[in-house]
Amino acid sequence: MSKPAAPLLHRLAPAGLALGLLLAAAPASAACYADYKAKQDDPLRLHYGVAEISGACERGNAEAQLRQRLADAGWNLLNVLGLFDDSGLEERRDSAGEFYLRF
Image (cartoon, rainbow, N blue to C red; front, side, top):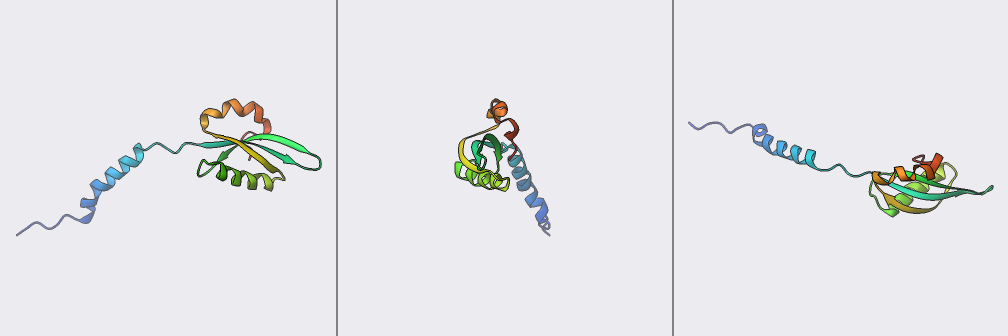
């Protein structure tokens, strides 16, 4: 008489373990930040700021997110100056002042 087939769980466990190890070894997605300029009218006010961007670290995505966040607070996005990771944060802290990671 032959042995019964191993339960499905026992056959899939090695594949699940391998996938888990692969995902654990994959690097976490890098943080994305944008520096930008914005303005308010009447009276005219300008500011330079730094903001964290979620999702794709691309100019179009950053512009869309910042345009909405800033508009909610009464500001208009003038332009996104650049995109960068954690390594560029500290050097921009003083320049951004109160607008460092505010929006």
